[in-house]
Length: 187
Image (cartoon, helix red, strand yellow):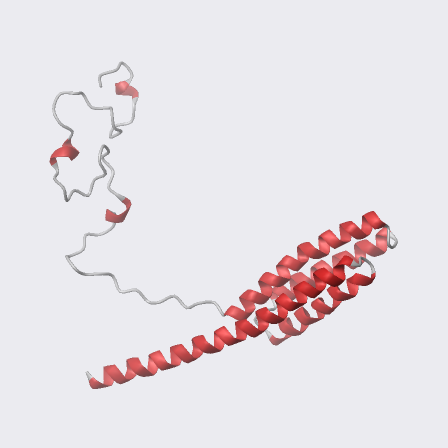
Protein backbone atom coordinates (compact mmCIF):
# COMPACT_ATOMS: atom_id res chain seq x y z
CA UNK A 1 0.00 0.00 0.00
CA UNK A 2 2.27 2.74 -1.25
CA UNK A 3 0.35 5.95 -0.96
CA UNK A 4 1.79 9.43 -0.94
CA UNK A 5 0.66 9.84 2.66
CA UNK A 6 2.12 6.54 3.93
CA UNK A 7 5.29 8.22 5.15
CA UNK A 8 3.29 10.64 7.33
CA UNK A 9 1.43 7.84 9.15
CA UNK A 10 2.51 6.32 12.42
CA UNK A 11 4.90 3.41 12.03
CA UNK A 12 3.49 0.02 12.96
CA UNK A 13 -0.07 0.69 11.80
CA UNK A 14 -1.45 -1.86 9.36
CA UNK A 15 -1.31 -0.67 5.77
CA UNK A 16 1.87 1.41 6.23
CA UNK A 17 4.27 -1.18 4.85
CA UNK A 18 5.21 -1.48 1.22
CA UNK A 19 3.52 -4.42 -0.49
CA UNK A 20 6.86 -6.14 -1.28
CA UNK A 21 7.25 -9.17 0.99
CA UNK A 22 5.28 -10.43 3.94
CA UNK A 23 4.85 -8.42 7.11
CA UNK A 24 7.21 -9.45 9.94
CA UNK A 25 4.25 -10.60 12.11
CA UNK A 26 3.12 -13.11 9.53
CA UNK A 27 6.38 -15.06 9.74
CA UNK A 28 6.45 -15.10 13.56
CA UNK A 29 4.37 -18.28 13.78
CA UNK A 30 1.20 -19.32 15.54
CA UNK A 31 2.52 -18.70 19.05
CA UNK A 32 3.34 -15.07 18.37
CA UNK A 33 2.65 -12.52 21.05
CA UNK A 34 1.71 -10.00 18.41
CA UNK A 35 -1.77 -9.13 17.28
CA UNK A 36 -2.30 -9.81 13.62
CA UNK A 37 -1.62 -6.75 11.48
CA UNK A 38 0.04 -4.62 14.17
CA UNK A 39 3.36 -4.37 15.97
CA UNK A 40 1.77 -4.12 19.41
CA UNK A 41 1.59 -7.06 21.81
CA UNK A 42 -1.80 -8.39 22.87
CA UNK A 43 -3.05 -7.15 26.22
CA UNK A 44 -2.81 -10.58 27.85
CA UNK A 45 0.83 -10.97 26.73
CA UNK A 46 2.15 -7.77 28.27
CA UNK A 47 4.19 -7.95 31.44
CA UNK A 48 7.23 -9.92 32.49
CA UNK A 49 7.76 -13.26 30.78
CA UNK A 50 6.53 -16.27 32.75
CA UNK A 51 7.70 -19.81 32.71
CA UNK A 52 5.23 -22.42 31.52
CA UNK A 53 2.59 -23.33 34.13
CA UNK A 54 3.34 -20.69 36.74
CA UNK A 55 0.71 -18.24 37.82
CA UNK A 56 1.32 -15.27 40.08
CA UNK A 57 0.08 -15.86 43.62
CA UNK A 58 -3.10 -13.93 44.23
CA UNK A 59 -4.37 -13.03 47.63
CA UNK A 60 -8.15 -12.99 47.68
CA UNK A 61 -9.56 -9.51 47.98
CA UNK A 62 -11.59 -9.06 51.14
CA UNK A 63 -15.23 -8.47 50.31
CA UNK A 64 -17.06 -5.48 51.65
CA UNK A 65 -19.65 -6.30 54.31
CA UNK A 66 -23.10 -6.75 52.78
CA UNK A 67 -25.21 -4.99 55.42
CA UNK A 68 -23.53 -1.58 55.16
CA UNK A 69 -23.50 -1.88 51.37
CA UNK A 70 -27.24 -2.66 51.22
CA UNK A 71 -28.10 0.02 53.76
CA UNK A 72 -26.10 2.76 52.07
CA UNK A 73 -27.59 1.86 48.70
CA UNK A 74 -31.13 2.23 50.06
CA UNK A 75 -30.32 5.49 51.82
CA UNK A 76 -28.57 7.09 48.83
CA UNK A 77 -31.63 6.16 46.74
CA UNK A 78 -33.83 7.83 49.34
CA UNK A 79 -31.96 11.11 48.85
CA UNK A 80 -33.53 11.17 45.39
CA UNK A 81 -36.90 10.09 46.76
CA UNK A 82 -36.87 13.00 49.22
CA UNK A 83 -35.86 15.40 46.45
CA UNK A 84 -38.68 14.28 44.14
CA UNK A 85 -41.19 14.31 47.01
CA UNK A 86 -40.05 17.87 47.71
CA UNK A 87 -40.78 18.82 44.10
CA UNK A 88 -44.26 17.29 44.36
CA UNK A 89 -44.89 19.13 47.63
CA UNK A 90 -43.82 22.42 45.99
CA UNK A 91 -46.17 21.87 43.07
CA UNK A 92 -49.10 20.90 45.34
CA UNK A 93 -48.38 23.91 47.58
CA UNK A 94 -48.96 21.88 50.74
CA UNK A 95 -46.95 24.30 52.89
CA UNK A 96 -44.83 27.43 52.71
CA UNK A 97 -41.96 26.91 50.20
CA UNK A 98 -39.38 27.94 52.80
CA UNK A 99 -40.64 25.32 55.25
CA UNK A 100 -40.68 22.69 52.49
CA UNK A 101 -37.16 23.63 51.45
CA UNK A 102 -35.88 23.26 55.02
CA UNK A 103 -37.70 19.95 55.52
CA UNK A 104 -36.38 18.62 52.20
CA UNK A 105 -32.81 19.71 52.93
CA UNK A 106 -32.89 18.16 56.41
CA UNK A 107 -34.33 14.93 54.96
CA UNK A 108 -31.70 14.68 52.22
CA UNK A 109 -28.85 15.46 54.64
CA UNK A 110 -30.22 12.90 57.12
CA UNK A 111 -30.26 10.24 54.37
CA UNK A 112 -26.72 11.11 53.29
CA UNK A 113 -25.34 11.12 56.86
CA UNK A 114 -27.07 7.81 57.63
CA UNK A 115 -25.63 6.34 54.42
CA UNK A 116 -22.11 7.41 55.39
CA UNK A 117 -22.51 5.97 58.91
CA UNK A 118 -23.67 2.52 57.81
CA UNK A 119 -20.59 0.79 59.21
CA UNK A 120 -21.59 1.87 62.71
CA UNK A 121 -24.52 1.09 65.00
CA UNK A 122 -25.57 4.76 64.81
CA UNK A 123 -25.97 4.34 61.05
CA UNK A 124 -28.58 1.64 61.51
CA UNK A 125 -30.46 3.70 64.09
CA UNK A 126 -30.35 6.86 61.98
CA UNK A 127 -31.32 4.90 58.86
CA UNK A 128 -34.33 3.47 60.68
CA UNK A 129 -35.30 6.97 61.84
CA UNK A 130 -35.10 8.16 58.22
CA UNK A 131 -37.53 5.39 57.24
CA UNK A 132 -40.02 6.68 59.82
CA UNK A 133 -39.58 10.25 58.54
CA UNK A 134 -40.32 9.11 55.00
CA UNK A 135 -43.50 7.44 56.19
CA UNK A 136 -44.47 10.61 58.07
CA UNK A 137 -43.92 12.53 54.83
CA UNK A 138 -47.15 10.92 53.71
CA UNK A 139 -49.04 13.54 55.71
CA UNK A 140 -47.70 16.20 53.32
CA UNK A 141 -47.66 14.13 50.12
CA UNK A 142 -50.02 11.14 50.48
CA UNK A 143 -48.10 9.07 47.92
CA UNK A 144 -45.19 9.03 50.37
CA UNK A 145 -47.12 6.54 52.52
CA UNK A 146 -46.74 4.04 49.68
CA UNK A 147 -43.22 5.05 48.61
CA UNK A 148 -42.01 5.31 52.21
CA UNK A 149 -43.58 1.94 53.00
CA UNK A 150 -41.84 0.29 50.05
CA UNK A 151 -38.49 1.78 51.04
CA UNK A 152 -39.01 0.81 54.68
CA UNK A 153 -39.56 -2.80 53.55
CA UNK A 154 -36.46 -2.64 51.34
CA UNK A 155 -34.51 -1.18 54.28
CA UNK A 156 -35.64 -3.94 56.65
CA UNK A 157 -34.83 -6.64 54.08
CA UNK A 158 -31.45 -5.06 53.38
CA UNK A 159 -30.52 -5.00 57.06
CA UNK A 160 -31.78 -8.55 57.69
CA UNK A 161 -30.29 -10.14 54.56
CA UNK A 162 -27.06 -8.14 54.91
CA UNK A 163 -26.55 -9.40 58.46
CA UNK A 164 -27.34 -12.95 57.33
CA UNK A 165 -24.84 -12.77 54.44
CA UNK A 166 -22.14 -11.25 56.67
CA UNK A 167 -22.67 -13.97 59.28
CA UNK A 168 -22.42 -16.71 56.63
CA UNK A 169 -19.26 -15.16 55.17
CA UNK A 170 -17.67 -15.03 58.63
CA UNK A 171 -18.52 -18.70 59.23
CA UNK A 172 -17.09 -19.65 55.84
CA UNK A 173 -13.86 -17.71 56.51
CA UNK A 174 -13.53 -19.31 59.95
CA UNK A 175 -14.03 -22.83 58.59
CA UNK A 176 -11.65 -22.16 55.69
CA UNK A 177 -8.94 -20.82 57.99
CA UNK A 178 -9.25 -23.79 60.38
CA UNK A 179 -9.16 -26.21 57.45
CA UNK A 180 -6.12 -24.42 56.00
CA UNK A 181 -4.34 -24.46 59.36
CA UNK A 182 -5.09 -28.18 59.79
CA UNK A 183 -3.72 -29.07 56.33
CA UNK A 184 -0.53 -27.04 56.90
CA UNK A 185 0.03 -28.73 60.27
CA UNK A 186 -0.19 -32.19 58.65
CA UNK A 187 2.07 -31.43 55.70
